[in-house]
Image 1 (cartoon, rainbow, N blue to C red):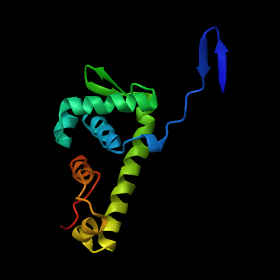
Image 2: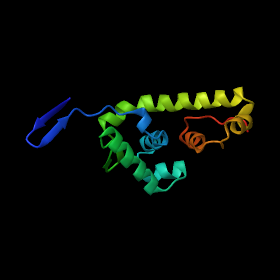
Image 3: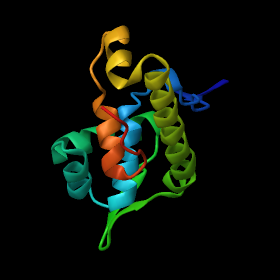
Image 4: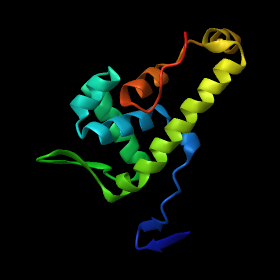
Length: 138
């Protein structure tokens, strides 16, 4: 729905699309939420602080919200970030479980990686550091 006011087009905000979102950004979201710090999140994820800041910029653009704001006590989640926190955590857990099940169904982690032609994902190692995944056999 578009409404023209003078030279401005006022459009209802588009619904965020999952297809337009890099799921690794959700891992960064979870780390910042947990640590309340871009620096500590970067340490947990074993990436640079600037990579975390860039991921937050992309998330902010995607959701059209600040998501986290600097305070004296660290990065505080906005109301939208608080609303997203549970579903994102739950979603990452579902993804982890699905990956674990898929790996074991096709001959364990090594067999899954070979059959799918890919390496073990860095996503799982990052999820382990956040405490939202459990180690699986090698």
